[in-house]
Length: 237
Figure 1 (cartoon, rainbow, N blue to C red):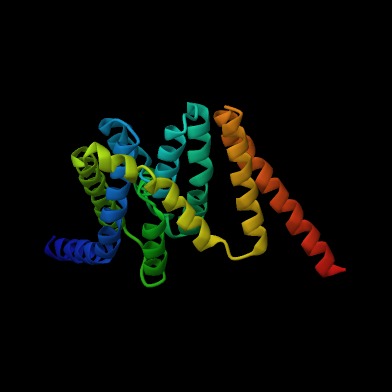
Figure 2: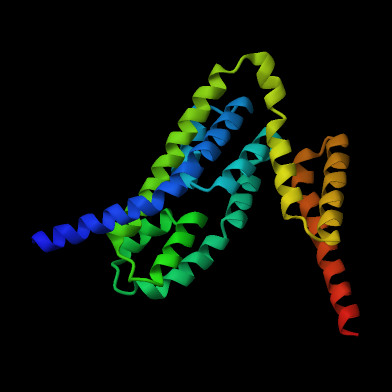
């Protein structure tokens, strides 16, 4: 009994140590989400529920942006599912290492399997067999830090003067623009991004914002796919 308790304490302390870098990064990002959600007039309880139930930074930021633009609920749900589809790959990757886990334990761990938690878990799985206590402490610490950050951001948003909040509302579009620039490394990426932006402006000018939220990215992505295929064919010729 004493040996089992000592091993459990060792696993939990190891997981906490591995989780601290994740938590230190999650708090400011989640605070930014809470702040932007508040500035975009999303009720605090909805922002908290998003962090509690969705627990996915990219999806939450995108949902705030779409909600601020007046997107309907089906668009919000579809966008969230598309953005989070990559998590299925995480589960497939780690699944063979969790064959002796109970189904309930797998479901609990799957909920907290974010990008960063997956990266740490996959690296540690090469060193030893993952255990539920380790993974729960790792993902639980990350989850808690995300909630703390969200609450902090909401409180900051409620304390911001109205004059300053009007300026900070531009922070969300600027955030996505910065992310777009960082991930755009090819000419095709720039063409797709530019086309999507132009189409979005046109639909907004026509007062068809909700329709534009669907058609603009689909049309731009289709053009990007065609360009990639033409480029590949020319390279093979």
